[in-house]
Length: 106
Image (tube, rainbow, N blue to C red; front, side, top):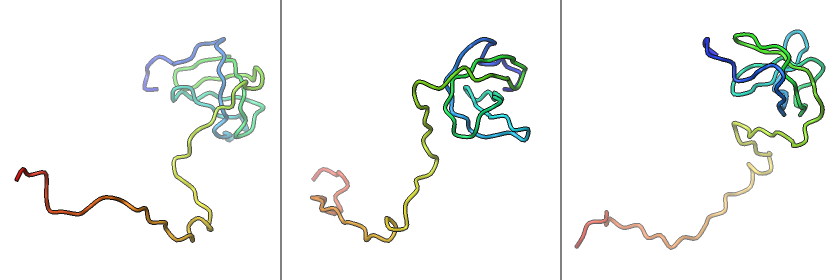
């Protein structure tokens, strides 16, 4: 967070999905890029958290309950099954006609 102010405050409640688990076993969640450590959760858990302590670069939170809505992140890369990759590509018919007319008026 480069010395700026943290985007969270003690006592605030957020719904998050735990992104990873740190070396000491605490879950790691991010709010606007700000890292929060949450004990007692596993990677992939969707929970409500209450911020308990905020330092300059990281914060700490406790589980305040299950998330009411499921927080889902879009994957960075598309995944395909082996069957999808082996299927022949379907060609779409198009009314496009290749010409050398580049929009020049005649």
